Length: 116
Figure (cartoon, rainbow, N blue to C red):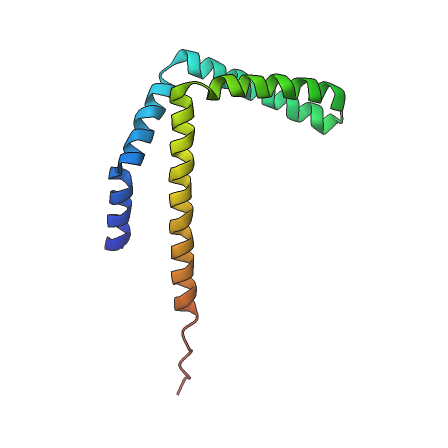
């Protein structure tokens, strides 16, 4: 557990993680970002409902609006950097998961000792 705690500490102290936390705080504290994000979520919900109901014509029209709103939001430098850094951090976490899984699988593959 000490090695795992050390790894977690190292991740939380990494420049990438610190930058992500700072950007997330700025985004969450901005009413403009929050409003745009909530608007995108509402549009996405409507889109999913239209697709679920099979109303493809309205869904196609709304999808264009959704993509435009999303492009507008992600064109903002802070949002763009945040999403890029979040993707990079997610990849790091995924790679760590793979290493852990491989290590666990190698432990499980040890030969069984016959009972005497």
